[in-house]
Image (cartoon, rainbow, N blue to C red; front, side, top):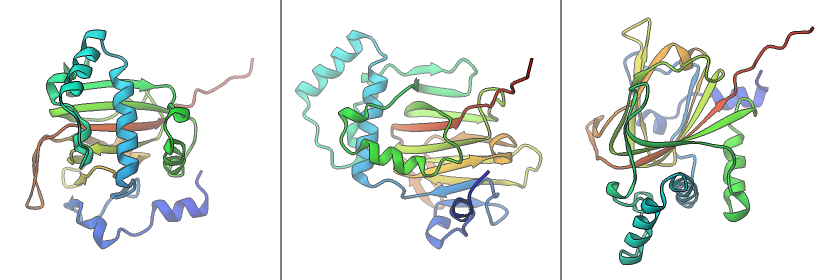
Length: 244
Protein backbone atom coordinates (compact mmCIF):
# COMPACT_ATOMS: atom_id res chain seq x y z
CA UNK A 1 0.00 0.00 0.00
CA UNK A 2 2.84 2.45 0.88
CA UNK A 3 6.04 3.22 -1.00
CA UNK A 4 9.38 2.45 0.65
CA UNK A 5 10.04 6.16 1.22
CA UNK A 6 6.63 6.67 2.78
CA UNK A 7 7.14 3.72 5.12
CA UNK A 8 10.46 5.19 6.28
CA UNK A 9 8.67 8.44 7.10
CA UNK A 10 5.82 6.78 8.99
CA UNK A 11 7.84 4.22 10.92
CA UNK A 12 11.01 6.18 11.66
CA UNK A 13 12.13 6.03 15.32
CA UNK A 14 10.76 8.78 17.54
CA UNK A 15 13.22 11.57 18.30
CA UNK A 16 13.98 12.74 21.83
CA UNK A 17 12.03 15.93 21.10
CA UNK A 18 8.89 13.97 20.13
CA UNK A 19 9.11 11.91 23.33
CA UNK A 20 8.60 15.12 25.33
CA UNK A 21 5.05 15.26 23.90
CA UNK A 22 4.16 11.66 24.78
CA UNK A 23 3.25 9.78 27.95
CA UNK A 24 2.93 6.02 27.60
CA UNK A 25 2.77 3.00 29.90
CA UNK A 26 4.52 0.64 27.51
CA UNK A 27 7.41 2.93 26.58
CA UNK A 28 6.55 3.17 22.89
CA UNK A 29 3.80 3.88 20.41
CA UNK A 30 1.97 1.33 18.25
CA UNK A 31 3.09 1.12 14.64
CA UNK A 32 -0.17 2.60 13.40
CA UNK A 33 0.31 5.96 15.13
CA UNK A 34 2.60 8.71 13.88
CA UNK A 35 3.10 12.18 15.31
CA UNK A 36 4.62 15.36 13.86
CA UNK A 37 4.67 17.95 16.69
CA UNK A 38 5.85 20.97 14.67
CA UNK A 39 4.58 20.28 11.17
CA UNK A 40 3.11 23.73 10.44
CA UNK A 41 4.93 27.02 10.85
CA UNK A 42 3.27 29.88 12.73
CA UNK A 43 2.24 31.65 9.51
CA UNK A 44 0.84 28.38 8.11
CA UNK A 45 -1.16 27.84 11.30
CA UNK A 46 -2.63 31.34 11.09
CA UNK A 47 -3.60 30.82 7.45
CA UNK A 48 -5.25 27.45 8.08
CA UNK A 49 -7.07 28.62 11.21
CA UNK A 50 -8.38 31.82 9.60
CA UNK A 51 -9.74 29.89 6.62
CA UNK A 52 -11.26 27.16 8.80
CA UNK A 53 -13.01 29.69 11.06
CA UNK A 54 -14.32 31.58 8.02
CA UNK A 55 -15.80 28.35 6.67
CA UNK A 56 -17.39 27.49 10.01
CA UNK A 57 -18.74 31.03 10.42
CA UNK A 58 -20.42 30.83 7.00
CA UNK A 59 -22.71 28.06 8.26
CA UNK A 60 -24.16 30.19 11.07
CA UNK A 61 -27.06 32.68 11.06
CA UNK A 62 -26.87 36.24 9.72
CA UNK A 63 -27.40 37.48 13.26
CA UNK A 64 -24.38 35.53 14.56
CA UNK A 65 -22.20 36.79 11.72
CA UNK A 66 -23.32 40.39 12.39
CA UNK A 67 -22.46 40.05 16.08
CA UNK A 68 -18.96 38.96 15.16
CA UNK A 69 -18.55 41.86 12.70
CA UNK A 70 -19.73 44.34 15.33
CA UNK A 71 -17.32 42.91 17.89
CA UNK A 72 -14.38 43.14 15.48
CA UNK A 73 -15.30 46.72 14.55
CA UNK A 74 -15.05 47.80 18.18
CA UNK A 75 -12.20 45.48 19.20
CA UNK A 76 -9.32 45.66 16.69
CA UNK A 77 -7.44 42.37 16.69
CA UNK A 78 -3.70 42.01 17.23
CA UNK A 79 -2.54 38.49 16.43
CA UNK A 80 0.58 37.85 18.49
CA UNK A 81 -0.26 34.13 18.78
CA UNK A 82 -2.48 31.66 16.95
CA UNK A 83 -4.99 31.72 19.81
CA UNK A 84 -5.50 35.47 19.27
CA UNK A 85 -7.39 34.72 16.04
CA UNK A 86 -10.33 33.31 18.01
CA UNK A 87 -13.07 35.61 19.29
CA UNK A 88 -14.42 35.09 22.81
CA UNK A 89 -16.51 31.93 23.20
CA UNK A 90 -19.76 33.91 23.44
CA UNK A 91 -19.45 35.00 19.78
CA UNK A 92 -19.69 31.45 18.43
CA UNK A 93 -22.80 29.27 18.38
CA UNK A 94 -21.32 26.22 20.09
CA UNK A 95 -23.53 23.15 20.37
CA UNK A 96 -23.91 21.66 23.84
CA UNK A 97 -23.65 18.04 22.77
CA UNK A 98 -23.26 15.85 19.70
CA UNK A 99 -26.04 13.52 18.56
CA UNK A 100 -24.01 10.53 19.75
CA UNK A 101 -22.99 12.20 23.03
CA UNK A 102 -19.26 12.05 22.25
CA UNK A 103 -18.48 15.73 21.54
CA UNK A 104 -19.37 18.60 23.88
CA UNK A 105 -19.37 22.38 23.30
CA UNK A 106 -18.40 22.43 19.63
CA UNK A 107 -19.08 23.59 16.08
CA UNK A 108 -18.45 21.37 13.08
CA UNK A 109 -18.89 21.02 9.36
CA UNK A 110 -17.91 18.76 6.48
CA UNK A 111 -15.67 20.63 4.06
CA UNK A 112 -16.14 19.95 0.36
CA UNK A 113 -13.33 22.23 -0.87
CA UNK A 114 -10.75 24.77 0.29
CA UNK A 115 -10.81 28.36 -1.10
CA UNK A 116 -7.28 28.09 -2.46
CA UNK A 117 -7.73 30.87 -5.03
CA UNK A 118 -8.65 33.36 -2.27
CA UNK A 119 -5.82 32.55 0.14
CA UNK A 120 -2.20 32.87 -1.03
CA UNK A 121 -0.06 30.08 0.32
CA UNK A 122 -2.95 27.76 1.14
CA UNK A 123 -2.27 25.45 -1.81
CA UNK A 124 1.32 24.93 -0.65
CA UNK A 125 0.18 24.07 2.89
CA UNK A 126 -2.42 21.61 1.62
CA UNK A 127 0.17 19.99 -0.66
CA UNK A 128 2.48 19.47 2.33
CA UNK A 129 -0.33 17.83 4.29
CA UNK A 130 -1.29 15.65 1.32
CA UNK A 131 2.26 14.33 1.34
CA UNK A 132 1.35 12.55 4.60
CA UNK A 133 -1.83 10.93 3.27
CA UNK A 134 -1.56 7.16 2.80
CA UNK A 135 -4.19 7.49 0.03
CA UNK A 136 -5.84 10.41 -1.77
CA UNK A 137 -9.58 9.64 -1.85
CA UNK A 138 -10.42 11.61 1.29
CA UNK A 139 -13.07 13.59 3.14
CA UNK A 140 -12.40 16.59 5.40
CA UNK A 141 -14.16 17.59 8.61
CA UNK A 142 -13.68 20.80 10.64
CA UNK A 143 -14.24 20.62 14.41
CA UNK A 144 -14.13 23.72 16.62
CA UNK A 145 -14.06 23.08 20.37
CA UNK A 146 -14.89 25.86 22.81
CA UNK A 147 -12.64 26.62 25.77
CA UNK A 148 -14.56 23.99 27.76
CA UNK A 149 -15.17 21.63 24.84
CA UNK A 150 -14.05 18.03 24.87
CA UNK A 151 -14.30 14.74 23.00
CA UNK A 152 -15.19 11.76 25.16
CA UNK A 153 -13.64 8.32 24.66
CA UNK A 154 -14.95 6.48 21.61
CA UNK A 155 -14.01 4.12 18.81
CA UNK A 156 -14.70 5.36 15.30
CA UNK A 157 -17.62 4.00 13.35
CA UNK A 158 -16.11 1.52 10.90
CA UNK A 159 -18.96 2.18 8.47
CA UNK A 160 -18.24 5.91 8.25
CA UNK A 161 -14.77 5.92 6.69
CA UNK A 162 -11.73 3.85 5.82
CA UNK A 163 -8.53 2.77 7.54
CA UNK A 164 -6.79 6.00 8.53
CA UNK A 165 -7.41 9.46 9.96
CA UNK A 166 -5.12 12.49 10.04
CA UNK A 167 -5.64 15.33 12.52
CA UNK A 168 -4.25 18.88 12.35
CA UNK A 169 -4.37 20.87 15.60
CA UNK A 170 -4.80 24.65 15.58
CA UNK A 171 -5.15 26.83 18.69
CA UNK A 172 -4.92 25.80 22.30
CA UNK A 173 -2.98 22.64 23.13
CA UNK A 174 -4.98 19.63 24.29
CA UNK A 175 -4.14 16.07 25.30
CA UNK A 176 -5.15 13.13 23.10
CA UNK A 177 -5.70 9.96 25.12
CA UNK A 178 -5.57 6.56 23.40
CA UNK A 179 -6.68 3.42 25.27
CA UNK A 180 -6.67 -0.10 23.86
CA UNK A 181 -10.09 -1.76 23.93
CA UNK A 182 -8.51 -5.15 24.71
CA UNK A 183 -5.55 -4.38 27.01
CA UNK A 184 -5.91 -1.85 29.86
CA UNK A 185 -2.12 -1.56 30.11
CA UNK A 186 -1.85 -0.48 26.47
CA UNK A 187 -2.56 3.24 26.58
CA UNK A 188 -0.78 6.47 25.81
CA UNK A 189 -1.33 10.22 25.79
CA UNK A 190 -0.04 12.78 23.31
CA UNK A 191 0.13 16.53 23.83
CA UNK A 192 -1.22 18.18 20.68
CA UNK A 193 0.23 21.70 20.34
CA UNK A 194 -0.92 24.07 17.64
CA UNK A 195 0.65 23.14 14.31
CA UNK A 196 1.02 19.46 15.17
CA UNK A 197 -0.27 16.62 13.01
CA UNK A 198 -1.02 13.02 13.98
CA UNK A 199 -1.96 9.99 11.91
CA UNK A 200 -3.89 6.93 13.09
CA UNK A 201 -3.90 3.88 10.84
CA UNK A 202 -5.39 0.40 10.73
CA UNK A 203 -5.70 -1.25 14.17
CA UNK A 204 -4.99 2.02 16.02
CA UNK A 205 -7.94 3.49 14.16
CA UNK A 206 -10.47 0.94 15.44
CA UNK A 207 -8.91 -0.91 18.39
CA UNK A 208 -8.35 2.13 20.62
CA UNK A 209 -10.74 4.40 22.44
CA UNK A 210 -9.59 7.95 21.80
CA UNK A 211 -10.56 11.18 23.54
CA UNK A 212 -9.49 14.82 23.64
CA UNK A 213 -9.33 16.07 27.22
CA UNK A 214 -10.21 19.36 28.81
CA UNK A 215 -7.55 21.60 30.34
CA UNK A 216 -5.38 19.96 32.99
CA UNK A 217 -1.76 18.86 33.46
CA UNK A 218 0.60 16.89 31.27
CA UNK A 219 4.07 15.74 32.40
CA UNK A 220 4.01 18.39 35.12
CA UNK A 221 2.96 21.24 32.83
CA UNK A 222 -0.36 23.08 33.03
CA UNK A 223 -2.56 22.81 29.94
CA UNK A 224 -4.66 25.96 29.97
CA UNK A 225 -8.23 26.17 28.68
CA UNK A 226 -8.66 27.58 25.21
CA UNK A 227 -10.40 27.11 21.89
CA UNK A 228 -9.03 24.85 19.21
CA UNK A 229 -9.90 23.78 15.68
CA UNK A 230 -9.12 20.29 14.43
CA UNK A 231 -8.91 19.58 10.72
CA UNK A 232 -9.74 15.89 10.40
CA UNK A 233 -8.97 14.12 7.13
CA UNK A 234 -10.20 10.55 6.61
CA UNK A 235 -9.94 8.18 3.69
CA UNK A 236 -13.27 7.26 2.16
CA UNK A 237 -14.46 3.73 2.78
CA UNK A 238 -14.13 1.62 -0.31
CA UNK A 239 -17.44 0.26 -1.54
CA UNK A 240 -17.08 -3.17 -3.14
CA UNK A 241 -18.34 -3.45 -6.67
CA UNK A 242 -19.89 -6.57 -8.10
CA UNK A 243 -20.06 -7.60 -11.71
CA UNK A 244 -23.54 -8.21 -13.03
